Image (cartoon, rainbow, N blue to C red):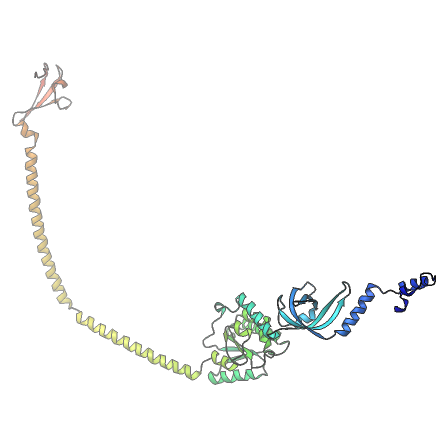
Length: 427
């Protein structure tokens, strides 16, 4: 191509016309140039790490993720395919500073170069620690850690369930502690892998299996579950930080004690469980008291109960004796009542006699007043009452006319008369 530079040909020479046409036919297309650039970039940058801040993060329905890695001076479009995203323990967010490993490629349809990532690590905290903090914050906001959601543990369970590996050291520690503290308890083991990629699914399955067992055995159900394993690295314990395990524990109707790792280890399961134990052995101690300690408590309570009953019995005896001293003989009681009755009878008679005399005196005085005001007394002094034959009392001469008949009432009798005339009194 370089030997066919048209500027090196003479305009007077007719031969270059054919050469010029041949040169143009060999000019590469956009696709060819882009493909060559892609090859160069992929060969030169097939294994690179890039550090930057995430922006414009989006995840369409395809399941792939697209974002921009940027710093103060430049930006780099980046693609993370779905298989890569499924392996990430934490959630990608705008503003997060990360390290991305992958290769530089060219998206030919747009002529844009981009990074195709296969690994993403957060800057600062490790990926697992970041994932732990993200899930913890989200579940706490949803209320999965709230105290009012915690179920109380049974006081003395007859049947205890354990969700762990049946070949691990944790199950042996739990069995030894329970058998030593309170033998003859029923223990059911719901086996689940507690490490590895499939561990979280197996733990969820074991929790559901325990609930199914209770539905099938209502007379003797599993009363409490110990879920856990022995110590290890954060990677070893990671299945207890998985979201599906946390949600299964929160939905489980059986009270759960989380017993994961050593005392310094904390997992999401510890926050969701109804109670956390620092170790599997400590969980077994929380489930059941020592038989000897319980027997001593019962004996102590029995002694206290006997003391209380004796004290109350002595109080009742004292009270009964006090009442006996206050009790009076029925004969004396009757004699006292008879004397009181006679006194009351005499007082009643005296009161009635006094009341009768007072009433008689008041009646006599009222009769005397009434007699003094009687019209008959007035008639005895020479006055007369005049009435018409219909009984109308006459108070004035104007009520009469000549010829009217009237009746006169005297002190000792009455007389009928006829009016001859009426005359007014002259002043």
